[in-house]
Length: 378
Image 1 (cartoon, rainbow, N blue to C red):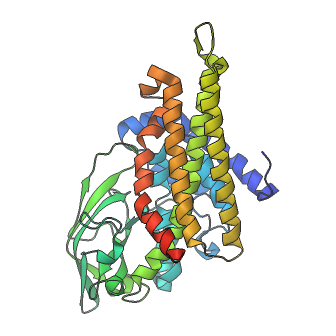
Image 2 (image 1 turned 30 degrees about the vertical axis):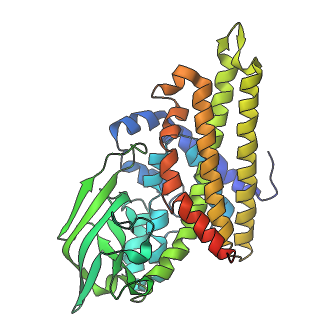
């Protein structure tokens, strides 16, 4: 369907993304998911079409991009039906923005060009086993020692955690609460850094890890922003992350819808195609309705962001809307497939396993409701 929000430039980028996904990702998605990883060479290929540079400063190899270009990227990647590939391939979209926004010029010049060229991998390390979404309560400590910080602690559930070359890490440099939180860039080969691979319900192709920091010495110049200002940078970063997740989840829901429609037209029961059974048609319409509503909300929020607004409450609600739509459509698609939907290899089955990580990552559904209500003055 045509939309007033997309220009010819967006359409051309969409076609390029579609060709890239059809050639470089979709044919291998099941194989990579079963293997638990995808080739590192994919980063360079993605950089080659400008995907990794979207929205980053041009001086470091980035490409100017509005909110709708980012939506196109997220939603075309989702067409492969493999959230783990999208998550790790694009982990720099949450790991690198704080560097671009607040790191020292020499650090930006050293790190960003290599990440955006697909030569190095960037990841964000916020979550701790005892804190979850409670960023202000994090315990990993960074003690200043001359021209270094000494970092000790642990992070977990870190996307691209096993092979990231650059880690944007939230640490406590001061007292309790948000005011004591800072951000440090920690390089992957830093002595004292150890990593443990985690096994997951879904996102198998994405490496996810627990990071252990044992008195890691980090140059003070790697401080991102000012000491004690990390919490504000993290909160700003969350808006972009949640919009990206909402775009992807809405697209994954659409993938389930499309796959269910195709199967319902082909599969016959009781002498006629599934699509001719009223109950199946109703399921498909319910799915389509929720996808359309989520896409409309997403695009209106993107437009508001382009106008300079900061609709935090609505972004939180958008994330919940999109993840709930994804959950509904994945469940209904598997139900339409019946026994075939329980077999590995189809997109709907893979997406069904990936529902919960989206409802948890980037702030749980409960946190989103609480934050939205506070923004509404409740």
